[in-house]
Amino acid sequence: MKPLGINLAAICALEGKQIDLAAFFWSNGRVPAETTSFVFFGSDEGAASTAATKCAAELSAGGDGWGDEMIDGAAATADEAVELIQRTTSGLQMFNMFGGRKVIWLKGATFLGDSPSGARSEAVQEAMESLISALQNLPADTFFVLSAAEMDKRRSFFKKLSAVAEVKEFSKIDISKPGWESEVAALTLRMAKPHELTFDNEALDLFVQRVNESSRQIANELSKLDVYLGPERRRVTLQDIDLMVAVSRNGVIFEISRAIEQNNSRLAIRLVNEQLEHGEQAVSIMRAAILPTVRNRFCARLLMDAFGIKADNYRSFESALNKLLPQDRKMLPLKKDGSPNAYALFNAARTCSKLSLKKARRDLQNCASADRRLVSSQSSDRDILHKLIVSLTG
Image (cartoon, rainbow, N blue to C red; front, side, top):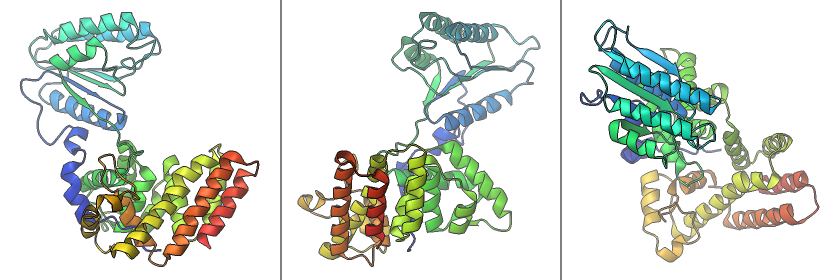
């Protein structure tokens, strides 16, 4: 199998368009002098927590630490949430008894999302209004940090909080949208820089597919690689990823695709069986792992045969796709903005050099037939997938 080959130069060129790591790690700069309150939240809980930790540490560095307080924001009920908010409010309104800087961090608040024990509760909303009032009149040298996984942005307290605090939202990369791989790859390369780690192309491909969009998992896996490689080696290989990086649930989808690309029917069938035994639906495996792989290989082969587009270099490949006439793009997988998903097609083209267009078309037809049988026939789902995999890898 030829490596999927993320083009490192292309990824680096894309970095400016990707998520700014300043947003993930509380930037390289300093806390603005005029800002006294900071809020970090979002679906990427690991990134929000990391940013809050860095912010709180920087704020605390300006004092003696005696006035600092970290309040655990986990609350199971609305009453517990109100108690935590009131405790935070009281802490903010009191001066540091020893004088100097004071930092209050409400960490990991669980009551700000849309839930009966959270933002839907009138008592919680009222308590938040009192907290915001306190933030508007903070004593000198008093600072506030809030971190949370969820925040109901429809509530009035969120709008008021945004007016008195610097608010940063950290959203996970949407892996349901085409082109997510290059975003995760760019993020991985940024996060690897402090470790001075670099990747072989195929190693970066596999790493991205195994960890997916979780910045916390990316950080954990990079730390493992850092320790495993030791100071004498900083280049990560495919073998290192295979050995050290855990496969996420979504990463199994890529492993099935990878096995099909390698014509390894035994591995593909074993992975499919494991997913079925874990309760995954056969039609979900078909549409998430098998069908996209076969479709991309067919489109890549057609591009290579009909338009002479080669997969030697990512930038030239992407440029060639963008030059296609609108009617020629219709059969290609597209991103949300309507442009071809060059990343997926480039990777497919790198793996199907020996695949004929006739075989690619037949594989696509077999997938469509198997998909129909999965939703309409009484045949065993396992048998349908097994027969399909054998036909694709034969």
